[in-house]
Each structure stands twice: as C-alpha cells, then as structure tokens.
Image 1 (cartoon, rainbow, N blue to C red):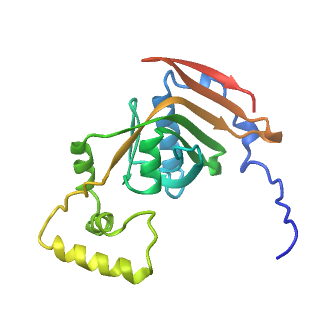
Image 2 (cartoon, helix red, strand yellow):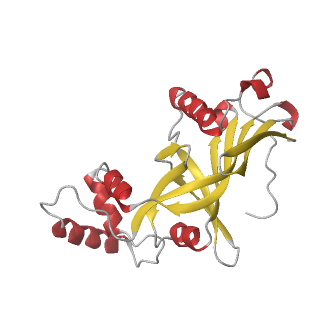
Image 3 (cartoon, helix red, strand yellow):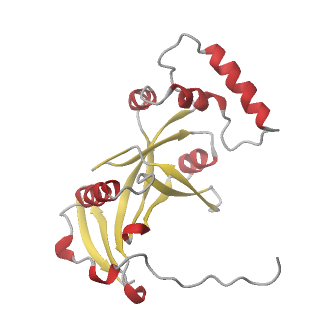
Length: 219
C-alpha cells in the first residue's frame, strides 16, 4: 500500500439532531447522570457497555491508551482491576493522572473523565477477585502482563503450572501484584453528538472537596 488513504467524514450515528442535551436534562450530580446513561446503554444492548479507554502517561509524559472494563462506579469514582506491574498499572501508580473515555457512539454519546488514581484496599480486591470465573483467576496469575514473552506455549506452560499450584483451592486468592484502581474524577463530561459537529457538551467540574459546577463547553 502506498500513498495516503482518506477517511470519509461520516458524521455521528443516528438521528442525533432531534436528541440534543440541555442543562435541564442533567442530573444534579455527575454520578446520577452517569448512572442514567449507563443504564440506557445497557438496555440498548450495546456490546461491552462497561468498556472504557483508559489513558495514562509515564513519568516522562509519554501517553498510552487501552480498553479496560469498568467494574464499579459510585460518587467516589470509577473502579477497574488490573495487574499493577502492567504498563497501565505502573504508569497509573507512577503518574496518577488519567483519563477515561466511554465511547457509546451507537447512541451518539461519549463520557469523558479526567482525574487521579488511588489503589483500592486489599479487602475490596479480594472480594471482587472471588467473583471472577476460575479461568480468569488463573489467568491473573499466569500472565506477566505487558512483558515480552517468547511464544504462546510460554503462557500454556505457565497456566498449567498455576492450575497445579492452586488445585483444590477455591477461591483462588488474587496475586499480590494485582488489584483495583479507583479513578477519582476532577471532571466528568457528557457529550451528545449533534449535526454539523455542533455537539452538546456539559462538564461537571470539581471546585472543592464536595463542590462541583456544571459548564457547557463549545463543541
């Protein structure tokens, strides 16, 4: 393949012009508003409605992103679980300012979060880990996430060794390097796609410990 390939400007999905988003539509707090949209997304049957893009940066400010599954949200923030020695884990703990993007484009929506990361306590990690399928528990012990490995057989052999190690153990405990991270938001933006790229954007922005303002942003 040679030369440039143009990407067509297809615009938002669906009849977004009639939807719109006004200040009167919004809940008093970001968590209630997020819960409304999340429930609508789940009811619409979108695949992996809890999938979110997590953006991190290393100590030198070089960014990286990946899709992760949200496992819990409440007024304290958004929780996901990961290997703390993975790229996202090491970056989030070394430079704890992150972004989240929920790309719900089938409904013409995005939610964009910026905030800081704090580890959840071990008891919360253990409670969640016990709910995972056994295969996923074994996988957390098997994979040296983000590290270079020689081939697929390396994982198969590690998985066999881990399965033997934990035979008869139920539930399997979480690895010491694995746990939850909570993103404590400083801002949560609700984005509604509109025609001609003149989208509706509202941001809940923290101004104090428990104080927030709601602002309309230009598209």
